[in-house]
Image (tube, rainbow, N blue to C red; front, side, top):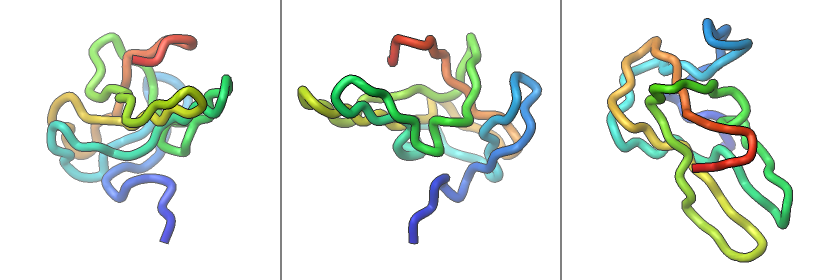
Amino acid sequence: MYRPLPECVTIRKSGIEGLGLFAVKDIPIGTNLGESHRKDNADWLRAPLGAFYNHSESPNCIKSEVYKNPFRTWMNLLTLREIKAGEELTVNYTLYKVK
């Protein structure tokens, strides 16, 4: 069965901006939460996971390139440290630069 989000996160109102991703249980450091973005040719597309996390100057997650060829790139969301239940998942991002 397809799940747009991993079982360990949910979407709810964020104190940062609009809606955000929140841990529903503790998530270990180095956890691959799944696909956040995909680039097909020149267009970046957000997966459900990538549509709801917010920016932070001290993020607890990072986008990581997991596959790349001249026509497609896949980015996954990885935890940088342990995330406690109830904590918002954040990434340091800019509009045009994917780290």
